Length: 115
Image (cartoon, rainbow, N blue to C red):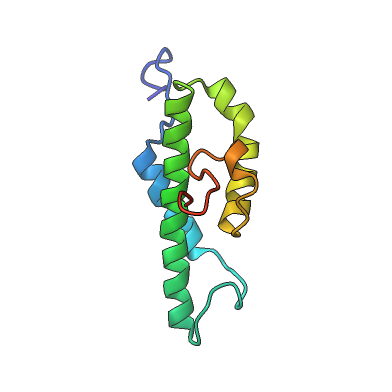
């Protein structure tokens, strides 16, 4: 397109739907250790990995939406806050919600109101 008109600026805009699908595909096709997912057979472990990939996609989408809503789309604030949010998310996924009250946007760290 730039060859047709040098004034045109071509950029890739990835919408949330395509980003989510790409994230699911990458996670679902990633090579994990044999002991990462439960199951006696490879098919059972593949099913567990698919469920994990769907959950990861849903969680990431919710985090993105909540951060955008909370900070009115201000990418400077979101970018600064994201490392702590991701750290809390990984801990939360490992059943440690100690960082959730302060840093998570999807889990408040309580017994009944957690992810």
